[in-house]
Length: 338
Ligand code: SAM
Ligand code: SF4
Image (cartoon, rainbow, N blue to C red):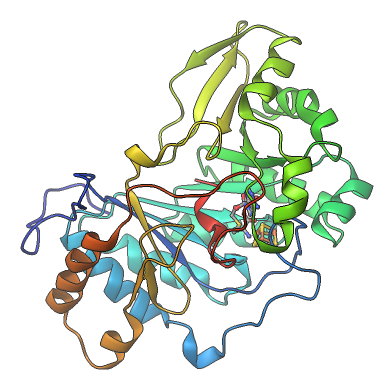
């Protein structure tokens, strides 16, 4: 990895609302080994065919072009990214691209214990682990599969490998896990991780239920503050929209991600490359261009950079999600966990 300045290929990525795009999220697979109730139906999705998924070389080609246009941070996500074979190879090839300063991973943690050492050696810097409950029976209800112990071991392995910071993403569901908010705050203190509470978003099948399940970030903060005074603090760095708070005694920090109650679109710095090669300009919506076709037709780095710049013109100003209204697309959720 290098932080030395590099020449931009004909200019940075700036959208029509003067936002600089410096952060690329890359979904490496649409498949998952969990079925979280707020994300995927029990029977799974109509999975992409193998040939439709970008190869590591193709992903690296897009990252190279993006880096040439000023992108500095990449997050690997999914589906569940650790299901994709030889992920360290992709990490290593992205780490070798001039201009990329930060590589992160979002995972459900099930396979993290064994994967963490090789990923860290390959150049992964940090990891976000999704975890919505600390109770095994509840884990099975929310994720529709068992695995709490594995996830906890994965978190420990990530810390032991020096991945830093480790952030825990917890989607808060009223009546399901909201009685664990304070437990999670204590977990942050004990394990020295950052726990971020995420507002549940209305996604397709979950849209109707979301209205009853939704609990705002402000309510989360009020419940924790009743347990111990919280002070706003700078976060651990990163590229996401979280707001952070520490306990007055200085141990442990929590964050909130509130796409519905405190929209952060005006600070949006990101686009997302889908596993199928669609570059999505906003998480919730159909603003996208296809990069797989051009890649397979032999597009050069400069051709890809040109396409990335052209795509900036269709990045929307903001998302239009509201309580109980379904998102236009279902696959695209990896953005939330920041
Ligand atoms: N499988 C990986 C994981 O779970 O971390 C990466 C992909 S997952 C889609 C990325 C993040 O999106 C997770 O933190 C998950 O909790 C969050 N997410 C998925 N559906 C959501 C929803 N309806 N509302 C809020 N967050 C959601
Ligand atoms: Fe899988 Fe992550 Fe969605 Fe849960 S949130 S179903 S782990 S992709």
